[in-house]
Image (cartoon, rainbow, N blue to C red; front, side, top):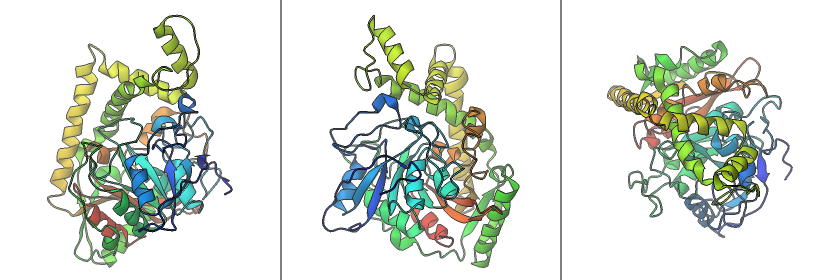
Length: 425
């Protein structure tokens, strides 16, 4: 398999069962999901040679369903980024336009599907990391409700926010993959029985007659003109198919990005403490006391974006600043959740542009962290509220670049958003 877009960190085949719902299908797996006997790097020098001794639950479910895993996909280091340019193994390019980023952090997974190197792929979504690359690469990506899919075997970045989700060329394909990986898991106490036994693929009908679609004004106003034009055309398609479009307001999302990054960085500072060259990670072989060795190992093997987030997260949790930053971020998170709950009293789904911008060119945003963080404005509120969302291709810009439509549903409302998304894809 030619990897023209640097979509894979490791190309290695893991054979699945002889029969099952995914028999004959190939699946690429993001490189922060454990695969027994196949290295799992998280896009970092720190784990460049790490080989897990067990499979993640989602990997076991894929192979039991007959899928063949064809490799581990490139990603922003430890999932920290929106462009797949912070990987220690080089940037992934977008198959739609090789001068542009594929989105992140699951950019390798989206690029593999868009390029036809795999039928399906798994990514992880902490603040939009499945939906962003799906939008930028012109494929479908689902961020499930928190607790629908097991996180056992997912290398943790921010536990309270992240979910493993499918990427596929079509809504039905993504739903088929979700059918296989969803459901409770004795290894993950956060999984729920809700949604178990659902037939998500059967829901992909595109039947929106009578559906009420809410459009949050705050998440549309900041989008680029070309993105808004494609989004409005997509809304017209829903109107023509019998859906009712209503404007809604989510005032709390103004604080969504700030709250998300405080919480995510705080959790990351705790989760990544294990990568010290003793418990996990490459040992620098440094002499001196443990603290000095720990610092030198991390300085040498972690990238700039990961260091930035660890430092900011540690600061937000430190004595004297916990209440000022972390506590307030959690209060903002509760407000975001309340706003969504209020909106779903009046509408069935919410629709926004997945990303407010077109795919940037390589190098444009990676040196400007604030710009990169603000790109997540439409996706992070969904993770803060632990809701399901799907990104489906809505059309193309005048330059032929993909634009994604995001549909958000109430808790465990995957069937509703899959049905609605199937109208477009």
